[in-house]
Image: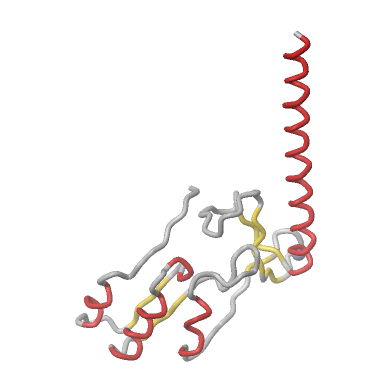
Length: 152
Ligand SMILES: [Zn+2]
C-alpha cells in the first residue's frame, strides 16, 4: 500500500498516565509528529519505560521525523541494521526503487530495499540513470507517436 500519513499520540498521554502500564512500545516512530513531547512526558513525568523503534534517516539519509530528537534523553540506543539485498553485508541505508520524491511514501519491498554503503552510493546513481533512461524512452515514444499521428 502506498500513501502518506503522520501519526499523533493525541490524548494517549492522559490515558497512559493514569494506567497501570509499565512499558510503552512505539513502532514506526518517525511518523509521530509529537514523539518528543509524548516520550518526554511518559518517561519523565509518568515514570514509564518507553521503547521506541523507528528509522533515523529517510531514503536520502536525511533525519526522519523526530527520532533523533529523543536520543539526548534516552537511557540507551541500539542502531539495528538489515542485510543488503545485493551483497548481504550490513545495510545501513534504504534505497527507494521508485522516482517518487516525497519523504513519506509508505511501501514495502516493492518500493524500498535495504542496502550497504557501497550499494547505496552505486544504487542512487543506477536508479537515477534508469529513471532518466525510462523518461527519455517514454518521451521518445510519445514524440514518435505524435510524428506518426502528424504524418497520418
Ligand atoms: Zn551491498
